[in-house]
Length: 547
Ligand SMILES: [Zn+2]
Image (cartoon, rainbow, N blue to C red; front, side):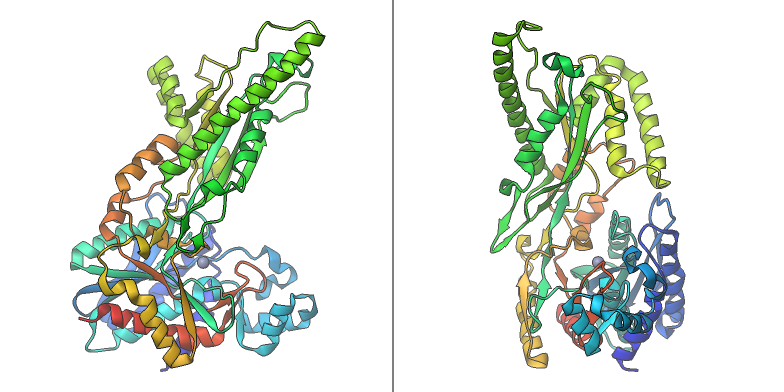
């Protein structure tokens, strides 16, 4: 059977498994794929070479699915894709067709005038497959499984190929974080020499004639800032310290601040942006809020959590100084016009990490604090798992709780990190990988010759993807920083750094051309899906596994 037909047959069924991220339906993928394996003679004969792998403490009981074809030697290539898809809220009246590409295509034709011009043209051309997950990324997944099936039918195969399908990519990447452990175990068990991790996320082309290979991916870090003020009535402003004032200064100095961006070659990470900002008020009254908290997303190319958190800390201190200076100026003018409430304002700059705050409470109250904290952390973890509390609110609930054990109530800023953390990964950081450093060039020669198409290389995929968990080199420093700064690290959120260091390998993303990910008009190019991408992937795999 031709690979195009294999891919199409599998993809239509794969899409039908409505595996919306962080929903119970994600688990239907497991039965679906196990059934798929049982239908392939090689896997029926070698049941130890496919199966599921548990995600520890997963609230939905989800598992990673994997299959492996063993050939000669120890060289191995790892293909990964995610089996979850985003929700279908924006399908509105077309929800029932979201998982049926052909029917959806017909329905979209009926409302084509309401679609953007580019989507309309693609729809009418018939060259694109629509439907939730077709592009992001069961298309790439179906190509990977179909290639594995083809390799399983060969008597004579050089090297080893593993395909891993992971849940939860669109959420916290619990699947990929577990897959790292699986890959470390397989490496030991079969004495594998990992050559490269290949993802097949869709590539977003800038022009129709030019594809993209990504030899890496951006990282993502989410620092939080919590400002504790000093409450007073609005008529007595100088007796209090309004956290809104200081927080505004911190937000203004960080939002879109180019000092946070990395430049590598001609690639640059976008500057940070705030994702969440709230004060602690729940009712209206005439006093200032007691605290204000928020978090920002920072995308990285080469920065570590430590450098990012240091920068946040410095900005918090500078902001505190600047706000105090303004306050003193106001107060001086106020004093010359009215009878002062106090001789001098008592406030001083105070900026601390989460761990410093924790230690202060721990020193003051010892075991009674630590036990209460652990209980709170356990309750919070349970609430997040049940979907009653989001991860950001949980983080601040913990900080609020620690403040109940703090005696010094002068204003201060607490900073730290909220999960998830995605390390950046790129072949440009890898030394000693020999020919593999030229893989994009070699593949580009191939695509020129085969399809007359050029592919440009980028060192960082900007869409954030699971290739972040392909390896790490400075795991001790990162672990220490996360322990120090991330209240939810360890209990609720974990990264298996030892295993990650063990499997460390270069990466590449080779995926089909796709558009409008996560939208109603999500679509994948059929020629890429059925012909070009499988050929490029096959060529890459054989190159990497060559003796
Ligand atoms: Zn994706």
